[in-house]
Image (spheres, rainbow, N blue to C red):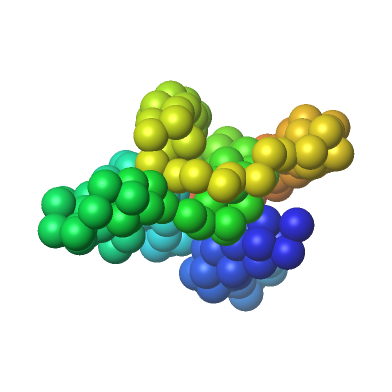
Length: 204
């Protein structure tokens, strides 16, 4: 839970750090005042949106496929270097298999990050939908290979953990998705109105 919470919190803070609210005062031509404030304006889509997408792309490729799939820092070195040089078959067997009690918690929070964090910004960045599908399909193969061929002593997930993922985090992601969809649409309309007023002032 803590890993999921802080993963989503940290990455959301990064995305929201690119807020650049704009406010305009008096129209010099008509002497009318107008104030707008759109946090998710066009500037955010060229700064904050790429930050969100880059995080998920890195998780789906570098973390999922390379770090977790190839495992260059533990399993790959042990299998390619240490195990062939073992003195006995027992030592080779022990080196060939890897123990990692944090494997399942890390994979669990990474999947929930795509569900909660990804759905939060998916309305503004539709590319997150196919990226999430890509991650899930690749993660299935990575976990299948790791759990059957590399790791030993992996703790089996409990029914409570599975229930929380399905009954808590997935609905939470959908609720946040519905809420942020309205926010993105509202700020898009404000940004469009602001652009029209800028064009009107420029032609006046």
